[in-house]
Image (cartoon, rainbow, N blue to C red; front, side):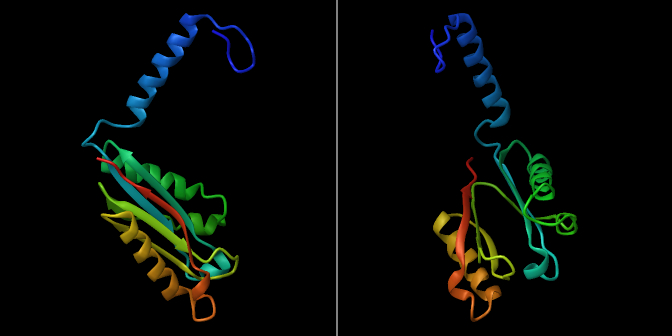
Length: 153
């Protein structure tokens, strides 16, 4: 077999690589019926000055694993200062639901909302409503859905 770089690879290597991918996929993505999810947020008193940190985890084998991963991602959120990342906490645990995040993308603005709902459209609508509520009159039209994902059973 020839790879993308034009280098010939023995079929055994390709077969072992494929087997490893299947094994890794079964470890990283749990069996149906075991899909827990979590959302973590670091929310300071002044979002306009201190930003916000967020992290999520979908399709984990347990609530604890989902929470640990969401907190880890929130605490590693690069676009927020360390003091904001230190505030990360779990704000939502869910299963077989969709999460949406809406925000005003301009730096120094306060518009922010998130929601979890059974359907993606519902989550997006609720997140937008929360963003508009926090954005203020002059920035309310700038809120945008920036993230949507659904957890699978």
